[in-house]
Every structure is written in structure tokens, then in C-alpha cells.
Amino acid sequence: MWVETNALSPGCVLLRDVKGKSHRAIIPKHTVLTEEHITVLHKFLIEKVDVSEKQAEGDKQKEIQTETIKVATHPTTSFSKQYQRTVQQYKKLFAKWQSSARIDITEVRALIIPLLDNMEEISKYVFKLHHYAKKEDYIYHHHIAMAILAAYIGYKSEFSKGEWLQLGLGGLLSDCGMARINPTIIEKETMLTEAEMNEIKNHPIYSYQFIKNVPILKSDIKQAISQHHERLDGSGYPFGLTERKINRYARIIAICDTYHAMTCERYYKQKQSPFKVIEVLQAEKFTKLDPEMIQLFIQMMTQFSIGTKVKLSNQKTAEIVFTDEKKPTRPMVRLKDNQIIALENYPDLFIEVLL
Image (cartoon, rainbow, N blue to C red; front, side, top):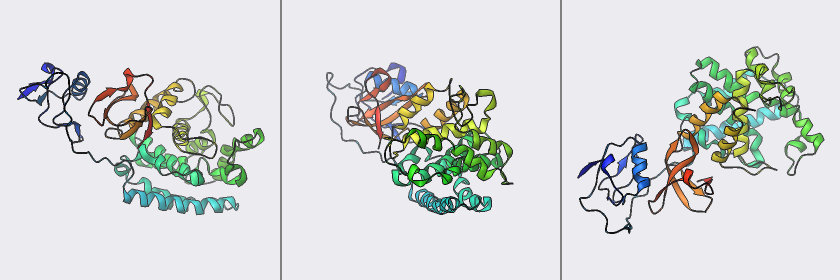
């Protein structure tokens, strides 16, 4: 029988899958509803559900075999091939720059624009870019990922296509100056010395020197390349600029740079869960990073997490069924036994790994 969601009570048994806009089952049929299930239904604005006329006996939930929902946790083969091909081509370009070759912007555009040109396809995988990167090739993946993320933020901000493509080029070239740094520093597997870190901090200047005479790049993008490690509170480098002097493109690239770096494994840094990184970004949105762009970035990233399989800090696996934009790192998840829990109610429990 069909019952309005407001009239449901714990113990009701679903007779049909409850599906959201993605057409995935939010709650599968035969589930014995709990208070948290009912909360999920309200969050998804489900008005009515089909339930059995008889409730489950007592409080004991029956073990129901439900069909496993297949969720793509890694990018599709076509996107993967195009991405990997782009990374390999970029490695060759970067090697030329390491040999003191000038940047050929026509060659750079031919490399990256075909990858950026299908935003609808990219939109499915921006949350999963960190899966590609290995610490041995991190720097190449990082530059390509920054191009994708920066262009996508521009796209979602309703910039013109020409503007978000420029932003993508800026993301790609913001670290091109790393080509002037001794490879032994870039590939070092232990913590950098103070002198080595100071040399790394020069890379925005080196990047600007590489691209300052490139005619196709707009002056604002060139400025952003030199500023992408600056922070609103003046704690960034290389110039220690504060909020009013940092342009909006630099602010966007800074977010992309921080997010992707923290979610990838590097030689002397362990990767972190995107949800942990988003919490860091939230904490810094009023001091170091642009709050408006951080909010857009968080909304952009968390909307793709519905259906994602995760491992929790208690080592249990679960599936994300609902995210709240006000608390994006604390979604509702469904465990293997169909129990739904809201992580905001469990402060010691968090998402450890995306599967």
C-alpha cells in the first residue's frame, strides 16, 4: 500500500525500491525502515512509498538479499585513455622545458584543449581524478588535473568558453616553472631541506618567466600563474600578497592546486580522503582561500559523490546515499546490512578512503 512519507513509522517494510533523480535505489525494496531511513526519504523529497500492510515483527530486521548497485568508482575507459594519453604527451613537453626549450603555446593548446572540450563528460569524473596519480608521476598528473579542475570551476561559474579554456591553460602552466628546478629536488623521497623548499617556492616566478611573452595567454591569466600560491592572509608565496592584490583566477587555481595535491600520494606526503581535504578547505575559506570559490568548489565536488562506495574509519564499507551542502563531509551512508547512518551524528567516525 502507498503511504505518505509523513505517516511512516520505523518497522515499515518497503515493497519497491525508492529511487532518486539518478535512478539508483536510495533504499532498496524489502528494507525495514528505521528513523534514519525516513529522514533520508524526507531529505530526498520523497512524498509516498509502497510498504507492506504488516510491519516487521518486533525490532529485528530480516536479512534481505538485495541486488548490488554497480557504481563506477573509477573513470571510464574512454576518458581514462584520453587522460593518460594527455599525461604521456605532457611528460614529453615538460622534458623539453627542462632542456631550456621555450613554451610553444600552440603545442600546449593542442595537448590540453581536446581533453577540456567535453565538460559534460569531465563533470562525471572530476571527483575521481586523484585515482590516476602515482607518486612516481605525480607532477605530470598534478598539472593536467589542475587544468581540468580550474577549467571546470570556470565552466560552473558560467564563464565564457574562451575564459574557462584560458583558465584551464593557466592551471596547466602554473607549475611549468618546476622544469627549472633540479629534478633531484622534485623527485626527492624524503622531507625537503629549508633551502630545497625555498627553491620550490620560486617556481611561480619561474613559471611566469616561462609564459610572460606568450601572446595567446591573457594578462590576468599570466598574473594568476605568478600568484597561485598566494593566500588571502598574506601567508603565501612568493610575494606574500594579501586579499585585494590576488586576482580571481589565481584564487581558483589555488583551490585546485591545494585539493589535488592533498588527495594524491606524493614522495613525502600521504594522500588524504577528499572529504578530509574538503574539511581543510572549509577551515581556510575565510583566511587563506577565497570563500565564494571554496563554496562553489565544495558544491561542485560533493554532488558527484552519491552512490560512491567508501571505507569508514571503523573499516566498514558503505555507500553514500545523501550529502548535505552545509555538511558535505558528513553524508548519510548505507552499510552492507542496509542500515543508514548519518555521519554528523558520529563525530569519531569518518570516511577514510573512497573505493
